[in-house]
Image (cartoon, rainbow, N blue to C red; front, side):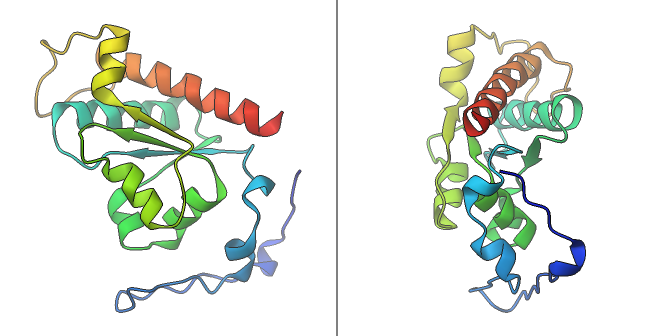
Length: 171
């Protein structure tokens, strides 16, 4: 199902840093059925931790979003979602979410749930890397380049899941 909406039909969301119960003033986005746009994009919501696994996960999300599927993905931002930035709320309300967790806290999955949604898929980095046989011994702790083999391996798996969700939603 394709929807066409003229920009003049949409209101600009109103934001307030003083209102913890922030809601959109855009009734179109608030009531749009998820199925109406689900086939178009997938939201990648990475973990918020600062360890090596989290850095690899976030870099892999950037590779998928910026290099391979820029028009079919959104890159979720945990702090923006927690602050109820409307764009990030729309990312998880309008599109299926892949939560990428790097630790036992499950912050990405829980943050999506806090906003009243459910991740379509949760990938756990320790299990994912073990499953793929990725050796982390040569990966630095502080910064990992997007070209690093571990990042590329995770990005390829994320890409496969993005493509699977897009196919399921459109088919």
